[in-house]
Length: 220
Image (cartoon, rainbow, N blue to C red; front, side, top):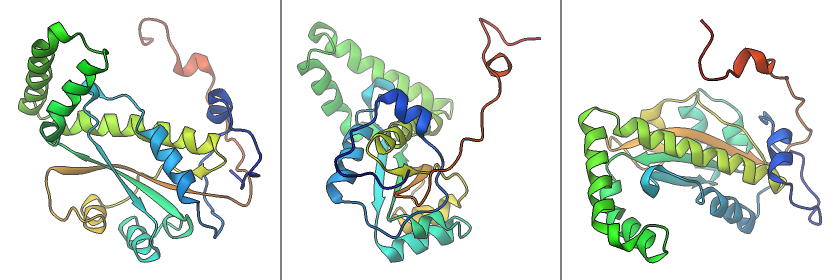
């Protein structure tokens, strides 16, 4: 999205969805900290399984860090050109660290019934342990992070900031860039460059709905 005028109104959700494009080039201009913080605030409002919020979003602004990300991502230019990249990582078993806070917050807010607090606590722990036993804990955490990243691109678009989902990178190299080293409990979901663009990318179109949307069952 080309740089928006400071007085331009915030886009609606439908406008942001229909207007969002994958930006390939970014203007050499920093994003204001307050704007990035607003995008992050809206991103953190994303839902997640049992509200466990397994994402760990690393905000990369430093030019040396951006070059390192580019190197970890086959030297794709978006990482060096965009003033900010959000690295959506997850902690696979980190849910245990914030488990009590999540339950307490849900109960005290009234979102979860107080009389079922212990049942909720047992359900969350049991479900997570079941995922772990079936080697699905990493998958579920990454799904939650991807949901959050979708919030990020729509929040950015609504505020006049372009973005591009990036899925071509070496996970081990990205982890080293963000300080995760060889930590097996950290996984990378997606990288998201953010910035202003010089022009509006055109829509490549979408397949007809009858080819991708079906009632009840996939066609045989």
